[in-house]
Image 1 (cartoon, rainbow, N blue to C red):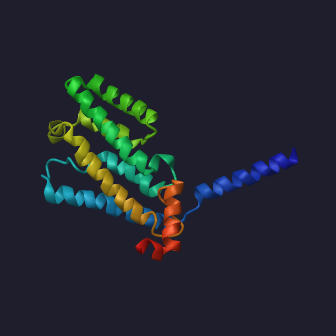
Image 2 (image 1 turned 180 degrees about the vertical axis):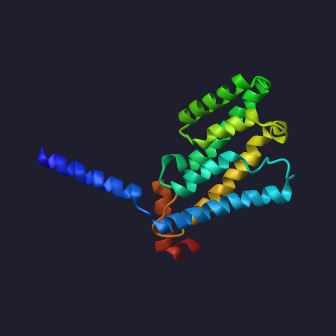
Length: 200
């Protein structure tokens, strides 16, 4: 009984330590990743599109940034989830909008609910995807006019920008590794261990 209590206390202390640990280096790279990821999208928005029509810098990208730069080990932050979750949710959102465009009390819950279920079935669950679906049915102005182009841009193109930045900043030090997929990690290790072989 005493051993069990002591072990429980040790585990609890470790969990509390990990959860409250302030890792300044980790926060620094999270900051840079989010800054450049969102910054590039914002730059494209401000220089290529009308300032009054915010169609490229959508809110769900901010939520994705929290995951892919700040919680890089999370299963929900992996590339499959980032891209698959957003693209699937965008497809669902646009489809629902075309079926019931003027009944927001029906289209909004349908878009979010269907996007969650399909993400679950395809193993691409990404919480910001719900927002992507909701934006498709609840926005005014240019986004509804985009139709299925909304899936390609801003959604897919924005996700690719965020992912490219994440692959750079999340692997820039030996303490960070993204994505967590074992094949990718082995490829990185092989590249660093035998750089001359890859050049041939």
